[in-house]
Structures are given as structure tokens and as C-alpha cells.
Amino acid sequence: MTQMAAPVMDLIEAEIPCRTEPDLWFAESPEDVEFAKALCGGCPIQKACLARALEREEPWGVWGGELILRGVVVPRKRPRGRPRKAPVAA
Image (tube, rainbow, N blue to C red):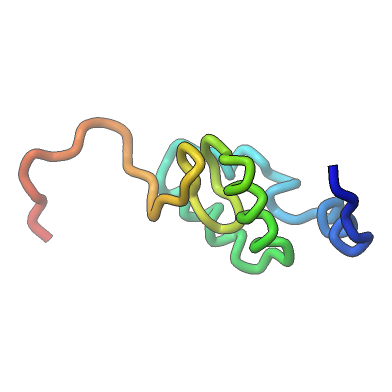
């Protein structure tokens, strides 16, 4: 394991949203996933979090403001169930 600089360790121990409410970052509903992604926006370790998650090939969850499924970033979480056969009128 590499040794982290003291300021980074201080941030890891800080009360950032993912440390205080971790279940949100592994939510099932697309709305909750988008909310978690938005909370990452002001995080001081956002880029490092995303980089480490991609390096570890995290299986799923919101990491660094991005949704990761099977180790890759995906734009959004699809709702459960089968997709519609016909497009919905807007």
C-alpha cells in the first residue's frame, strides 16, 4: 500500500457525504443515484476517488461523481424492468 500525504488522509477522515451516508452511493433508484452524483460535485477528493475506483475496477456504485457498473463509467442508471418496445410520446 502506498503512503498517502497527510492532507489527503485528513480529507478521507473528514465528514464528506459518502462517509456519513454511504448507502446512497449504492442506491437502486436512478433518482437516488443522480442525487449521489450531485453530492460528489463539491468533494475535494472527487478526482482521486474516481481514479482509484476505476483502477480497482469497482463493480458498481457512485464514485467521484460518476456511476460505475462492472468497472466502467456509465452515463446513467436504467430503471428496473424491461425497456419499452415503442418510444413514449414526449
